[in-house]
Figure 1 (cartoon, rainbow, N blue to C red):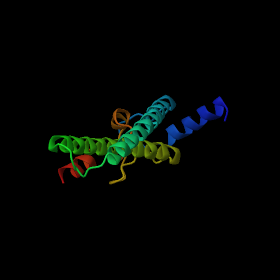
Figure 2 (tube, rainbow, N blue to C red):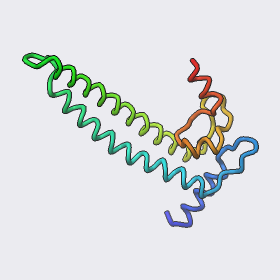
Figure 3 (cartoon, rainbow, N blue to C red):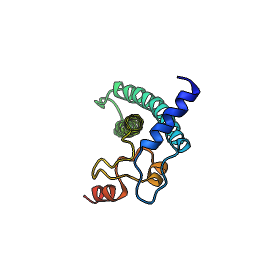
Figure 4 (cartoon, rainbow, N blue to C red):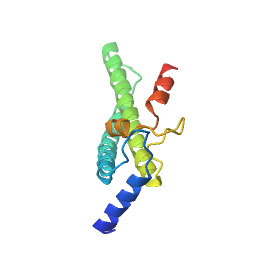
Length: 144
């Protein structure tokens, strides 16, 4: 794809994205910035995920039966495993959310709340490009 074709495609994507009442339409530059951020997140989190999975696999192969080990060492090992599991889950979540956001941009549905169907708002998406819900719906979800 030529540079001109790519720029034309980004302009088309920008024009198709929903905006809340009172927001300015998306510009090609704004969409490019969001896409660049999301791609960097995918790359960074993909690397973090691979590292976390390797670390977790190493921790799991150390064994957890505790035979002949000091109880403090067993507890420490368990803590490390739990922490690595948490890091791996977080990396997977950010990775998946970023990939989803990129797919939604390509489909032209990026910026639409998955709950109420209304536009999420540019300011929210520029601050948190992986957002899939408007502020109102996200607040409702978090109160539950």
